[in-house]
Length: 304
Image 1 (cartoon, rainbow, N blue to C red):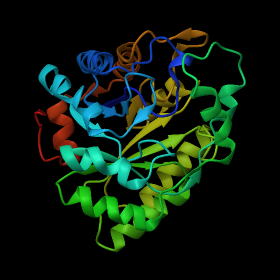
Image 2 (image 1 turned 120 degrees about the vertical axis):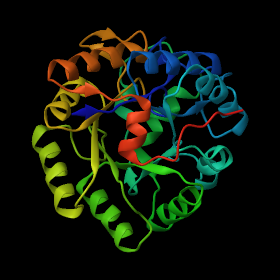
Image 3 (image 1 turned 135 degrees about the horizontal axis):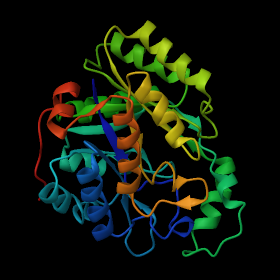
Image 4 (image 1 turned 90 degrees about the vertical axis):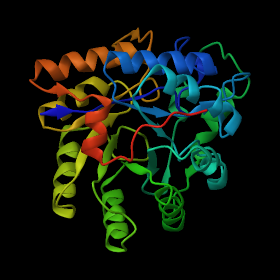
């Protein structure tokens, strides 16, 4: 059975100070994305950063800094975030995906608290002056994804031929997706990303993963599903998903470590590790074109 490995290269959660290996310049994002694809990632989940200060960015120019290099160096599926950062407006979050029209986008399925402030508790030398206040201020941070927002993303990006990684942080998000299926705004094949371990969403516990899968089976007759666990339980839940017949997502957006106390030196290290786990369980890693066929994507794009 084919397994799709997705890799989230750099996101809006971790800050550069937390790991010297987290890419934030265009050159590093491109290099790590290409290396992750070579290690076995069929799908690259991408965010942009300001190369001057590492801030999450919605700038089309910042995206243009690495997308052409990735498409020139890899045939992996490019999956652009529409979540961006919780402090961006929806229009900002959609600017680059609307411009580049990728074959795949992420879509968060509900408004939620997105509490990152425990990450600021450990003393460290902050590389940039925005990092510590940003994390500490997340005790009052709401990640806005209303039904109107979701419908807007579906209409705009679906109209450009994109398929979606439906990011579901809780059981309620699965019911919200069912609502949009019933409204005729979502058609299959569905690709569900169960996101566990974010404070504000469902916790990373085995029984919760089973409940997410069972609920999805009740709501959707046919779907592909994947799992990411934010933080220290990343590989544990990747192994569970692989053993249960699902797909997996790893990457430095979700977890900076390769194992307890050992920082991952690259996204490719995590991909190689999860590939080894999947293959030991008898799974066959999907190529990018096999992932495209499973997910019903419109086809590879070359960005300029």
